[in-house]
Length: 287
Image (cartoon, rainbow, N blue to C red; front, side, top):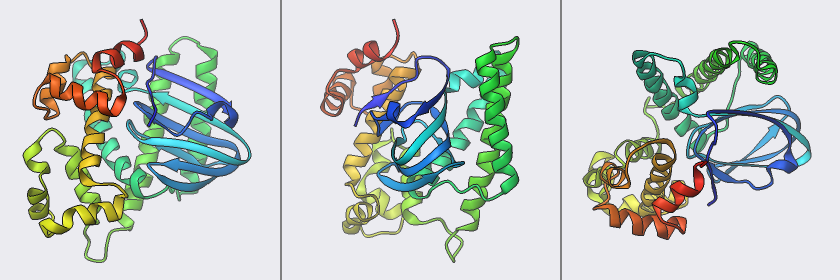
């Protein structure tokens, strides 16, 4: 699967769909998309959903996304990294922002895996559309304090989206009040991706009250891929994210994500990415 990095902390594009024909891609940044005109299907983590004028979507880092139109389509794409929301903030504010973004990623990780975005409150839809118009004006005008204003506008939109998605998730719990096992399992794997002992089949079986012989079959049934392939792919995507958005050495990344050593990471990375971690970092980042 192809990947794309963000070369500036914040980018905004208004574009016709033919300029997006390289998708689907795994992106290593947040992306807020508004459908300004048109209709068709969008791809999200191997699922396909219809889109139409006025729809608004949030993609988090490592989501795989794409669009295929059946009517002339125009999109507004707002792309930003964690660095963008940290600019001009104190260390305490940066820490609070990081925690808030982690919460937002967890909410949208599940939502984007199994559901399409549903913003049911009409007032919220209208508010986000207004904020996007203001965001475009600020971005194009480049007037004094426009970067601070862009930060505030993006934060406000994310809060509105998060309360809609969180509310939707709470309204769709199972009859026994619990989240589906596959959803909890995916979050568990994501949270413990660097802890090999917690990702063993026997441990997952005990944690989620499944037979060890059934864990792999259950996982493939609901995700369409093997458990080991998913874990390895997610690890590699996390490595790519660290290479692009941190100053960690390759050895430090290997230790954090549970590889035996730097050479083990390198072999796995080359197998899935077709290049070495060092070459990937050098090629992706601007000189």
